[in-house]
Image (cartoon, rainbow over all chains, first blue to last red; front, side, top):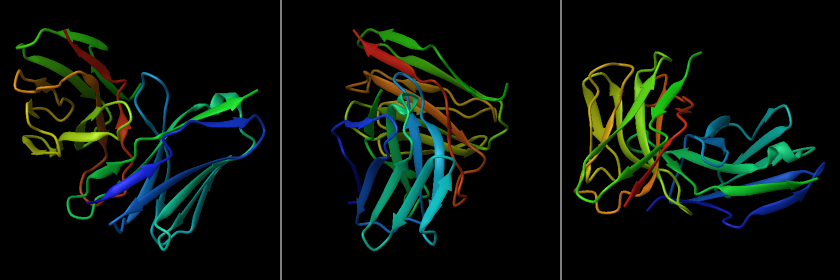
Length: 112
Length: 115
């Protein structure tokens, strides 16, 4: 079955450093992958989308890479700030019915 | 302000009762979705609708029902047949369903607790 894995343990990063989050998938060839941010008790907010033919996408301090050989996407936040603390979700488009399949998310904590 | 709203924010239900969660959007989006979020799990799709008067079951539709009589509204009913309904429910919309590379816009969620 199609499966998406994100680190279940919280990631603690010192303010100013680069935070890197991982999204791995199996049994799947996604056309694209999306990253969302979710704050406690709120709905997710879209951040970035990267297509299968794109290696890297940037938006301000955010960078996403997509390696279809490794079946992995990396999400980077440079010059991290305490306000970046949140849970980050990755989602892939399903093959057959265009639904999104979601990872469980990784909680990121930026310490001042 | 354009956006997607859900109500209520918190909902308590006794066992055996049906409850309806509201979802409204003024983004003029064709597609709308209902997800369930449980701790440690990814979002799971309950139902989705790509157009008015049409909707499809997601992965966990049993015990739930929806309607899509208006483009802007997609209410979800949690029936007594849903054995474990306590969860955080999220409604989302996107410009179009199908193969489009569309981001999804989410509402603030409804936390349902069965007493």
